Length: 261
Picture 1 (cartoon, rainbow, N blue to C red):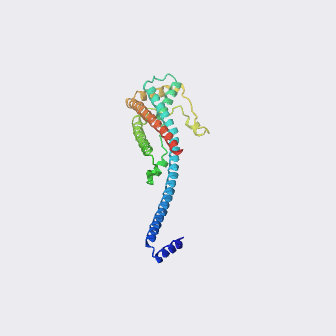
Picture 2 (cartoon, helix red, strand yellow):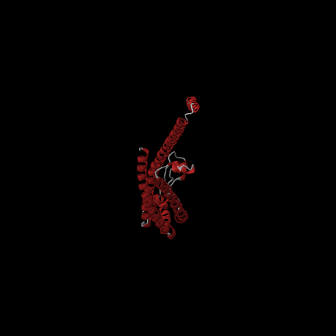
Picture 3 (cartoon, rainbow, N blue to C red):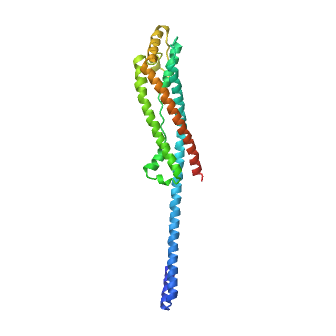
């Protein structure tokens, strides 16, 4: 093809047809420019296709992470509800009248004490940010919402750390001072058992001792302050997490729409 055009140029120059040669030269330049533009267009199309494929992969990954977060956050919220109600119950306790009531109080204390954390799945969004590829997400609104959710996750983590500190100072440490841990647990039977839970019993001989320990604990001002903080903190955490959960579910819907475009 190149030899063909070269021959035409040589013939026009030999025949001294400069005007025709000039027209031909301009036409050849235009053809070259069109070829370059077409090549650039194809290249841009390939780049856009690769970016769209990469963006879709990331968005699907983020959506899957958020679906896991939605489930875990719902369970985290349910835990806050239990803690909030259990702490309120202990603040309004009545002195136990029998071993069964001691066990009920002990069970309620453990509902407050048991610790649960929310660990978000941020692998996909962390990968995008870490690789500097955040710009691959073309929807700016979606991008802002994703970063906002990540920020709110950090607030949950900060609130949980603060709550843990208060639990240790007001609840865990005070409980260890005032009462025997799980008085009804038969340790020897427990370690020789194939079951996870194997409890003994509180008989009439040690009932008064455990009743006294429970009364002293639940009347202790520091412990009661801890229960109040537990009610307030778990209540606040629950409300905030419910708002975040609503945002996560809306974000999942938006990601679905983006992925299926």
